Length: 62
Image 1: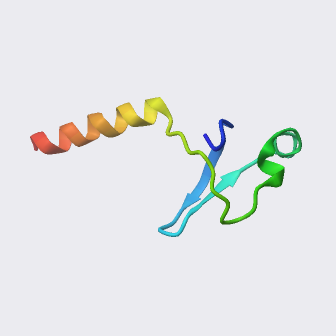
Image 2: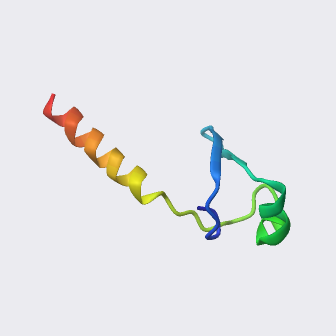
Image 3: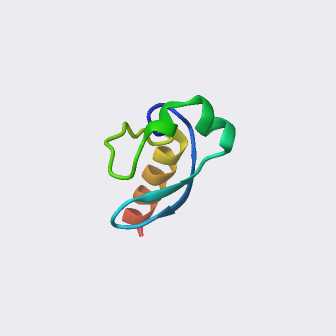
């Protein structure tokens, strides 16, 4: 989530990331005020954290 808004990641690079944002979400949230380079609050998906831990543990056992 970005600033508490759950979004879909469209791409990731070493320099940053791109998001899919539907027009309604953009219109009714603080995202409309954000610019490239602004500081935002990032929150990782809890399920994603569990998957990462599972895969990491599995790879260590191999």
